[in-house]
Every structure is written in structure tokens, then in C-alpha cells.
Image (cartoon, rainbow, N blue to C red; front, side, top):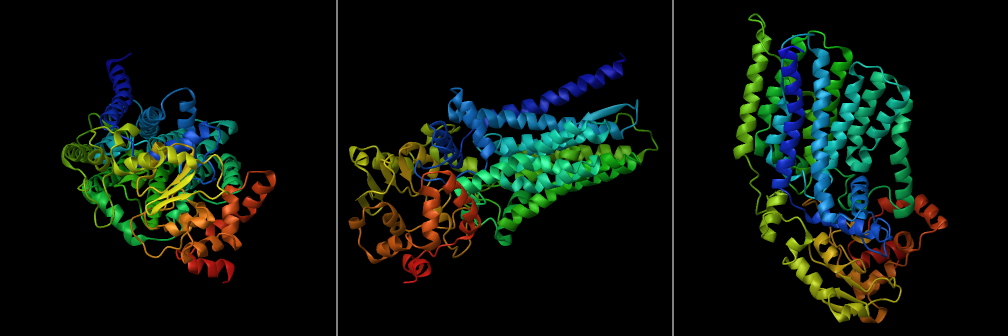
Length: 570
């Protein structure tokens, strides 16, 4: 083996190990778990207890948007691993493997475009940009599904990159389609990227049946969702009005991410690099060109979708999948080690790479989100810094880090008493005996003010926790939206509805509570309650399936008096 070949092989090995090691080191150093992830852990606890994927034992509500992520945590937890540890370890592990898959794909495409036997230098240019952004480090963990997204995006691109040169069997192509089809189960909005990747697969391999193969697993899950939960989408999507446009908020969200890290600079540099790279190799091949364009198109469409729905309240989180996808074609680049004097493009590409790496070093050292303690005017906050400051722990990785926060203290005070087991409803206005129709497994009903995940895990599985913002409540999620605000926190269910639904009839006889109680017995509102509360049977499953579209579209007036008139006609 020649010294040059040994050097290239050693460099390739280091290429795979060093970025993954950086991911693991940064993920561990910045490890934390957010309240939203604790909501998922409560759902997983119910799943492991045999209650199904629910937030409350007596109510079928899909309170998570990442069923595959919840299933992975459940599978790991079933082996005896603490759920918080499982979520953190899976997040770091999936992120590292996703980065390695991105490297493998980009390296394969770079080799297919480069000249045989040329002296080459391998530079992880796109990964340097990716790993330089501080908010990326935060979401290697957080307990949320972002690490799994990196794995799915990088893995899907690697499977597509295998089509750049080698012929593959129809069965392996079908399995590639199935893997790409898992996107909506990782998170529903990834259907945008799944669509682009599937169209790329069809264009490269002509496997039109692959589209059907990709739809099998998510299609079966969708049927199960409609029959079990009585909805077309997760409850969180209904609460956030994901089908409605909120461009103004979304543009604020995108601008906050781009301006914080001056991402326009590496975007321009890498775009120029790609243009020069294509010109340098003259004819990189139709397959290679298409495979380089596919993730860029997927990233663009995904960013437009996220911007349209208004983004998220956590800085950068929802834009990270598109950011990672946009960097896939240049995750690793292959540059001539000794360009010929007349090859001006070779020197230009080296210069662009050097400028990008200088920006990456500056970004990693100095650029941080300004929203570490306070919300921005657009309702955006640095998620990790907020919870670190709130908990007082440098690495809040478990529920114990949050026990001194107000929601935890409120939940402990309300349900960790002997009276809680006398079946009471606990609200901010008082305590009421529970209605006899409330499931006998429920020992208490409580209404936390904030932090649904913290309060839910503190309360325990036999306590029904009412989510007034709607992420885990069928009524609150379907309230008619009065005005737009911070994503995911725009709706608020009044306690009149809570007392009408859970308190004994004689406990509160106010006009609004009586109106809410009447409304709950009429029309589609009654159908909604039956869909989520009645025992599951084949008949119930079929009825839920048939009414899922109407129940997803259903919107309830916040006022009980108006709702009674709407549903009962009086």
C-alpha cells in the first residue's frame, strides 16, 4: 500500500470518529431534559404500565408528536434503564450515528465525482458548520426527538447515496423506501422531507412501488391513530393550530435563528463552493447532481413549512432538521491536495473552505442566543438556559432537578395528601369531590398552572392532570383560537369547563358551570368526550375512525354559554 493511500485511509477513519466524538462530548457536556420531554416520559410510563400511549389513564389523547421516539424510550425502559437516562443516551447516540451517516453519504458522492487517483484532502466542511452552532449542542439531548431526527435524515441520505454508482436489488430499494417512510413517525412535519426523498428514489431507481412500501408503516399507524384517538393528527398539532398559517411569527423565528449565528455567511460560502465544485468536475453525473440537490430542496421546503406554521417557542429547535439537511451535500468535501497552478477553481475552493472554518471557530466560541433568561418579544427563549436558570442545576437531567419549581411544589401539595385519595378535584379556586362518572382508577384531578411534564410526573399515573393549554386535553386543544401568540401557549381552558367535567353535580352550581355541563352532553362535543373516554372496543374504534375528521376540525367557543347555544341550541 502506497503512503498516499495509507494517509487517505487513515484520514477517512479519523473523519468518521472525530465528528462523532465531538457530538458525544458536546452532548454529554450540555446534557439536560426539558419539560416537554417529561410529558413524553409520563406517556411512556403509562405505556409500560399497560394503559396505552396516553397522558392520563382515563383519556385517550395523543400528547406526543414523536411516536417512534416514545417507542424507543419505552423499549429501553422495559430493559430496566431509567427513562431519563434512556432519553439522554438515545439522543446522543442517535445524533452521533446520524452524523456518521451524513459523512458516509457525502464522502461517497465526493468520491464518485472526483478524479481517479488524484491527490485528495477530505474536509468535514458542512459538519464544521453544523457543530459550530451552540443550539445544536443543546438538542443532542433535551430528552426530545431531535437526535432521532438527525439519525433519520442522515440515514435516509446515506441510503440514497448508495444509488450514486452501485446497482441495488429491488428488495433493498424497497427497504430504503420503508426507512424513508418512517419520517412522519419520527415527527409528523418530516413528511415534507420524506416526500422529497421518495421522489428522489423514484427518479433514480424508477421504483414507483417504493412509494407504497414507504406508506405501509405510517399508514397503519395513521389508521390506529384515527381509531384509537379519534383524530387525524396528534393532539398537540390541534392545540397549536398547525394547519393555519402564522407567517409573521414564523419569520421572527427564522430570523432569530439565522441572525444569532450569522448563518448567511456560511450559506453564501457553501453555495459558492458547491457551484465551483460542480464546475470543477465538469460532469459529476446525473445521479450525483440529483443527490446533491435533493437535501437542499427538502431543507428549503421544510423551512418554509416551519415558517408558515409559526415555528416554536424554543430558539432554533424546529429549524435544526432543515439546517442539518441543507448541509448534507457538503457534510464532507473532497478537495485536490495539490491543485495545478492553472486550476484557479481549486484555490478558490480552498479559500472558501478556509473562510467557512474561520466562521465556524468564531461561532463556536462566541455566538450565543440572547434569550437565556427572558422571552423575546416574539415569545422565543433559549430552552436549555431557561431551564438551567430555573432549576439552579448546571445539567438538569432528571425530574429531581425540578422539584423546587412552583409546578412541582403545587403538584406535591395537591396530591401528596390523604385527601387526594378521597377523589377530589383540585383547582386554583378550591377543592371539589369528583363526579361519579370519573374513572375509578383516578384518585384525584389536578390543574397545574404551568409545566405539564413536571407536574404530571410528580403527581403520578393515577392522578388526572388537566392541561389548560391543550397539549394533553381534548377540550382545551379544540378551543376556538381568539388571537395568535407564543406557539403552543395560545389557548386557555377556563376552570368552569374543568369543574363541569370532573366535579360532582352539586359541587358548583354557577351559571357558567351548568352551561358547560350541558354543552358536554350535546352534539359533537358529546361525541368527542365519548371518543376519548369510552372503553375501547371494535365498535368504538370504527366509530372513532369515521368521526376522526370531524373531531379534528371541531372548534369549541371558550365561553360555556356560547358553547351550549352552539351544541345544544339553547
